[in-house]
Image 1 (cartoon, helix red, strand yellow):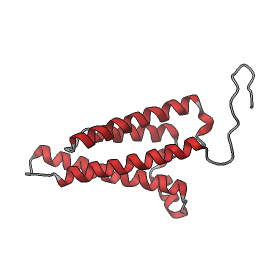
Image 2 (cartoon, helix red, strand yellow):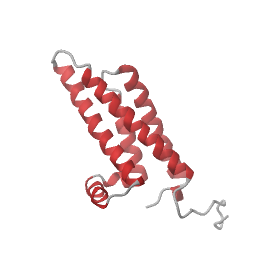
Image 3 (cartoon, one colour):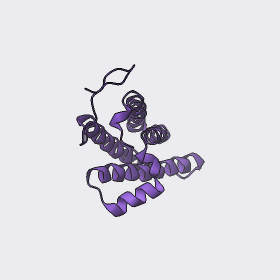
Image 4 (spheres, one colour):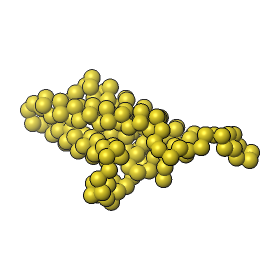
Length: 148
């Protein structure tokens, strides 16, 4: 146990990823797959073209794009590929910051509320928003769990 003067004791950060980071990675991959399923099912249920349907289709395409980006990020954390990591850091560097990633997850959660797949979109949106809030709380309480 390491202690700080005037502060409470905390466990020293370990060299490798913790069980919590593995659990969060699995949850993030699951949520990205759910988000892709929400976007795909909303696109599949497209009907007649009107203004509202067109905007839902655009939101569905964004869900598919963001879920692919999120999944690629999580996969690159497990099996790093220098070219992929370099592109992700250059174009989507906010994913490498705990608060940036949490806000991205919350944003994606709100996108899920705007698609036609009502039940799946609602469940995915709620879970994504909860995951984002949990990431923020964990970062504020245990910042040593999130490497810079």
